[in-house]
Length: 252
Ligand SMILES: Nc1ncnc2c1ncn2[C@@H]1O[C@H](COP(=O)(O)OP(=O)(O)OP(=O)(O)O)[C@@H](O)[C@H]1O
Image (cartoon, rainbow, N blue to C red):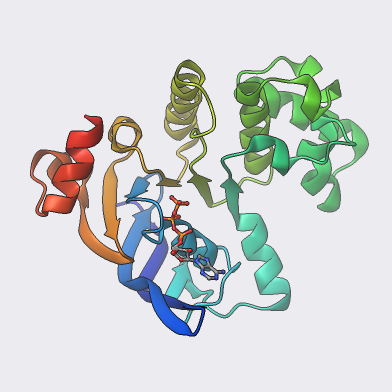
């Protein structure tokens, strides 16, 4: 049986808005096994990104616990925190923001490898392999972020995320800024990588059609609460709440 890579138990988070406190994530629990893809769907403001930020330690966890391969990471600090930054990689909506505009894509992808002590020649070879794995010719390593299309830049951002062989890849609306054809190509790349590399992915999206095409399991969030959690088939074919039914009807 596949190993559990990530476990979240009773996660909660609230923020102060004006003089009021409101709950952005309310008692959310889930598991992610090696090679599995879990989709998190919900309307804007339902708490999807806040969950991702708590997992990557960008936001404190108010209540609950997070475990990465049995090790609790809820309040990680120092070296443990640096390891988490490496072991859980994120791909965001706007790929260009992942890269420094003054450096080539090759430099951006190779940065973490060089920080790990890899020499220049090995880094160059590994960067070229990563680009090819993500469907880009190796000459793209010489290009600057403004010299590539949004889809090409997102491929490079995925290559950069995979460079350090992370345990988990979090895609936060990773295809939302791309036009429909390019969105489909990036999704196909992720499907290919998931099969070939046994990637473990947390896939955040407001689009249930994309989640249906890619994810094994899905969690539906409404106002910070998890209103459905199950296999993608179960949730889409037999939704338990009107909220999920509305999400399904709006896209499928
Ligand atoms: N640092 C913060 N301070 C105050 N409120 C915040 C903060 N981060 C998020 N929120 C609020 O928490 C709620 C959940 O936000 P979150 O970004 O998790 O939603 P989301 O489902 O990812 O939305 P979207 O799909 O639009 O990205 C929103 O009401 C948001 O305004």
